[in-house]
Figure 1 (tube, rainbow, N blue to C red):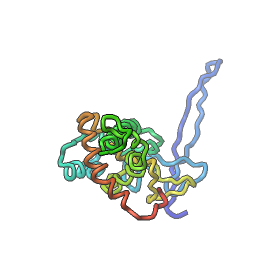
Figure 2 (tube, rainbow, N blue to C red; figure 1 turned 30 degrees about the horizontal axis):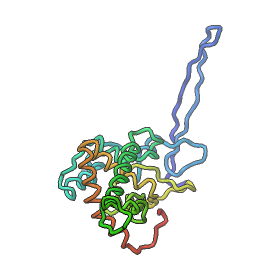
Figure 3 (cartoon, helix red, strand yellow; figure 1 turned 135 degrees about the horizontal axis):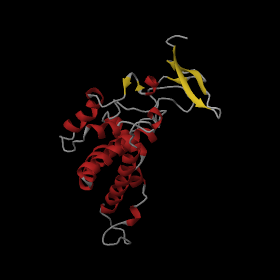
Figure 4 (cartoon, rainbow, N blue to C red; figure 1 turned 45 degrees about the vertical axis):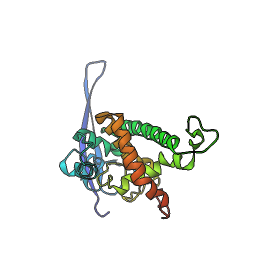
Length: 234
């Protein structure tokens, strides 16, 4: 098989029985490097690598996200390297053994949902049932629901190249690997965890400002007006 190698690693385990005799069990572990082989363990180096990029907080790994924060966002939301690496690491990567973005993403999505509700309520209305000029009937509308959707969050990440370096599992449900596979449930965590990270470092007000100015004002109209057909990852 082209590009395929095996690496053998010896392991030993010492046991003591009731008579005090020492027994040593030895076995070999086979790590498969390259195409997947049924029944063989993946090489740890493969597990920590995505598209040839080794996991870690190197300057090259963090540069795309740092550039985004420093250029487009004018350095308003600077984040420490440790947090940047966590943002671009999904739970599916390396079997969840490295710090991943799930909690930051959950926090960010809660803030995005809150901001979407505030936005909907604040729109001018002549609805006779409005309370203090706030139209609660707008909650649950298509626009308000889309504002907090995984599709919008994914599109923001892709449009701004937040996924240039993204540590995640490449395999499709079928087991085949595809670098172009971009499911919303995974890609949306890039944007949501960025919101969560901004909130933890700069506060709720700064995070809501980012949501309103960047995600809603900067991306929402563009995605709604887009007539492109859904990709296989949608």
